[in-house]
Image: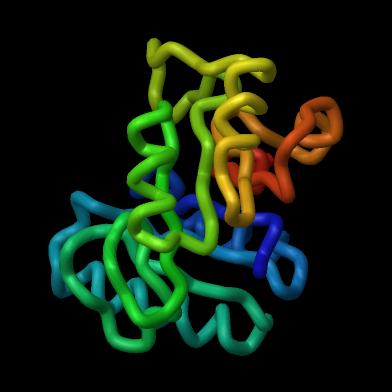
Length: 164
């Protein structure tokens, strides 16, 4: 199970490819690109899938529309890998009920992708993580240095940390 993840979004533009190249072998990617038109989204996912396979990366799709070759689903039901967002206790219960293998606890810290959103902080994020029987990933303002400063997590995920 990957313990280092990239969360994609439209803000990345062509920097997406640089971010993917920076990921270590065996890392994971959650492909979000929710507002990208479906035809373009499918094309982008297919290109990303080829790169992920060549680099030994796990590629999970978010959103309601299945994408050819997906290795799992973020916040959905699947026979493949299921990952789940956890922002509070209710979503922690939902992650358990869905049989998720990975829970993304967020936002641990303030993040540029959700400006103004209230962060959990390290103590509350750790308390949520300890409720979860699956792989726990810290998300939100994360990088490798910040990950080493918190407890209760198996790994971390980011957008911006992979772009700098």
